[in-house]
Length: 416
Image (cartoon, rainbow, N blue to C red):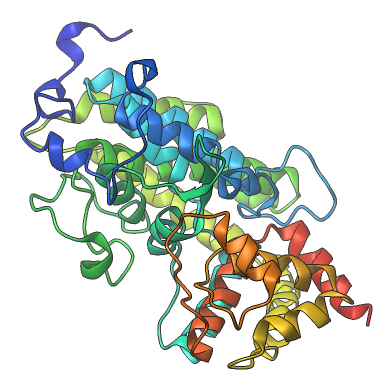
């Protein structure tokens, strides 16, 4: 149990006394007020807004690593991974004296930009966006795109609005890439526009200590759980299991699993970190984490069983993109979508979803104008004046899909 003296980061935590507090809680637009009835902090409101979003709900049917075609309830999904990251990060934050509400909000939203079918799906959509939009999708930046421009919530007037999260939470989402094997994380010093300056994953650290905690917690959460799931699915031979036992001995443990990895690494970070050094693992624990990540890469992520899964995901996602992208017509797109929607339910759903994000005039069908009026959001696709705007919408729609919905849409496509 932490004591007051253990909270080594209290002086740099993101609370109102922090000199950067006003920047941290700044929103793009003023959020509607509940007056004296609001009992939550700004970061508490962000946590709830993410929790209530459709994007968060869909994480329960998105692949973390292993495609769950067999319906195995014990295989980790994306939403469970998010819960693990929230647990790890908030435990570290509380122990060190950081703002655990900010930490939890970042953790809740950190994977909201992930495509269906896990990293395989992200790789496929990255190729499509590079070819058709001239840019590459990556889930950390796409997470900010989704919380800024895609996810909608009903306001007290029953109108849909963008999530409009605080700067610190958005920054933590785009900064959470944990693929770089660096130790002793420190936040960057300057505040700047996160969308304009970030061009690659992991390019900058988060601007808050709390964001850096989530970045480390992401690695801690997935390394052990991926090993457990792979073992459950029979990925390891006896030699692989011996390798894991050898790694466990270095941790003075009997096994490598979620419990062992999480407990050992949380304690290690809390013991070895300080504002002067940064958020640090001990050299021994950092080496163990690097060794585990290498083991997972070679024995799990590069396993040929996942290669077949990528081919399956590629067939589905490319087919959906090809079909929807072919329905664009500069002046009659919504009329075409309406007709196609009579035969394919997912096209009807796409048409209604797209209506929320378009500016309209008298040339648009009535159903589009009526739906658009129900949302006071940023109309990011304009009036679909260009095919690039339309293709951006197609990509966003597909990225937002769950594995299940993508499969169902593909089956719907086959039923001509």
